[in-house]
Image 1: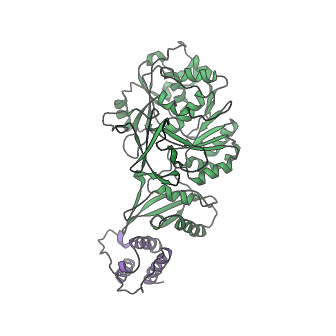
Image 2 (image 1 turned 45 degrees about the horizontal axis):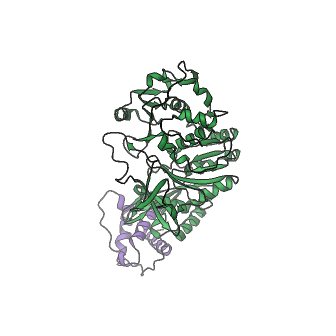
Image 3 (image 1 turned 180 degrees about the vertical axis):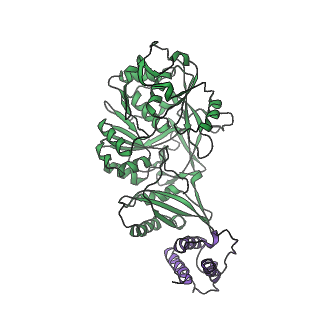
Amino acid sequence: MSIRTVVLDQVKLVAEHQQKSLLPLVDSLPLLDSGLDSLCIAIIVANLEEELGFDPFGSGNTVIIPQTLGEFIGLYENGAA
Amino acid sequence: MALPNSRRALLDVALAAGAGVGQTISDPVHRVALADLTHSTNVAVPLESLRGRSVLLLTGPQLPTVLALLALDGIARRVLLGLPDLKEADLPQVIADSDADFVMRDDGLRSTLEADPAALHARDVDTEWILFTSGTTGAPKMVSHTLLSLTGPLDDGLAVGAGPVWSTFYDIRRYGGLQILLRALLGGGSMVLSSAAESVGDFLTRAGKNGVTHISGTPSHWRRALMSQAASRMAPRYVRLSGEISDQAILDNLKAAFPQSDVAHAFASTEAGVGFDVRDGLAGFPASYIGMPGAKAELKVEDGTLRIRSVRTASRYLGGSARALGDRAGFVDTGDMVERRGDRYYFLGRREGVINVGGQKVYPEEVEAVLNRHPAVRMSRVWARKSPITGAVVAADIVLSEPAAEFAQVRESLLQSCRAALSAHKVPVTLRAVTSLLVASSGKLSRRDG
């Protein structure tokens, strides 16, 4: 499974658990307008750390806060590379 | 229950209460008859040489401290009930702050009683009792009590019955344990001491063999006890919880394990003393306790925390730099957050233990209460997991009641219960199955984040 798929699956799973309706998940979608609140994003980051074994925000490098879904996925793709 | 007025020493009041008949104090190795303390002692120096002095008791096992305390109350000016985990590095500060001029360790005490040549001592000194509280950081704090402030809570109308045998999971050098020792001694009963060297199972077996009728511990102590098959070897009439929040699950589990027993939970702290106990088998406490006129311990809620004022509260902390213990009106802030729901107050957790999830507060104890009422859960610990997005998210470690249970299924079911009972930010993001949880020597769940 690609990193992209893993991330998107988590986004959908957490949105379902938190009963949030999501806009169509395209790369240009602004994260804060996606239907996810900051708690959802925090949960997604925590779950992805368990699933992928790393947290791109906790790597010690300065991380540019992602604004769009595409940038968010990119952080994980770059971190895994 | 014979309660002391000032100027009466513990040994004298205890002997008057039960006439010393059949009253014993025991640990895994020794059994001492209370009546023998009238003419013998374990203190290796002449007791009169300690008159008016400040004595730090620093023994490993509890029994030597109990016997020395009985010998010294009414003779020494001050007795400090040192805990075995007191660090040597903290000792100079403790001695300086307490003016201790005699440190009594195991090697200064005999392992058995020997005849006391002076025998009759005037026990007329109003001895100050110093208890240690283990703070999370820094040197332990010393809290000043008297026999009077410590025995204040004993006059609570608890019907004990004849020939009680008391016991506690607590170390009696801690407030919760000392309450039980005093109840035993002043109520004409015997006392079975716990031992740090003994397993939970061995302790429960010994309690059963000694016919323990009344026994206390923290909810964490009790959750561990119920994991042991030896719990069924004991048939107490009275089970008491204190020191941590008693949730409905532990109260129900204890009632099921000991159906013949009254299950009560008490609220107390070393500084504030016993606030109240609750005997209706329900978590929390009736709202009518707050501001009740004529109550022996007055309660109020301010800034969300429970405050207590009574003659049972300690008088002060020892040490020059120590802060004041109560506010100007004499109320001690317990630091325990409470919330009113209907006609009851419920404990939320410790003020300093709150987890901040993106600005919203979560008390670990309220999440633990939801987890603990799931049948697959024996005990749990909720902790703050760092989050780059919200600062923290809620994480939980779970000890399962059936270790073989498939955790993936339990996990999903637990999350469902949490989502049904808690707001979204309180639902654990991380759930781990662990085989055990660390319980500190205070009997409380260790909350250092691991």
